[in-house]
Length: 147
Image 1 (cartoon, rainbow, N blue to C red):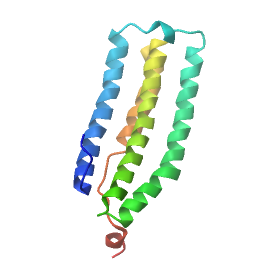
Image 2: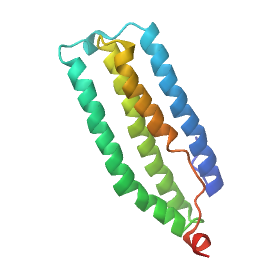
Image 3: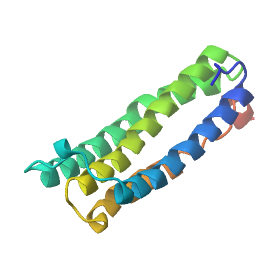
């Protein structure tokens, strides 16, 4: 994708990526059921490691969502016509979505690590829910919100 030149282009690209990320989780579930697991994922502690990594990833998602993302959003709201502020907001949003996507990847790894699909569903669902909650919205300037 080309670098966005306007806020509207950025929003359109973010929405396209949002759909792609959600669709990829469905593809992970499909891939896990039809593809044999890689040998290296079948180690003794795989069933403990991937859920722990999923919890740590969730903590990181919460930290990034509350500490890093609001700054980029605030800057975009203060300067909605500044493309650099908009790009920073887009980059922070992409990072946030990628962190959420990792939850589903841990579900795929858990399923490939000799767990049943039923045991991987919570990680798939959590990743799907987190991404679904990140639907890109228009950036409104603070001036238009106050007045």
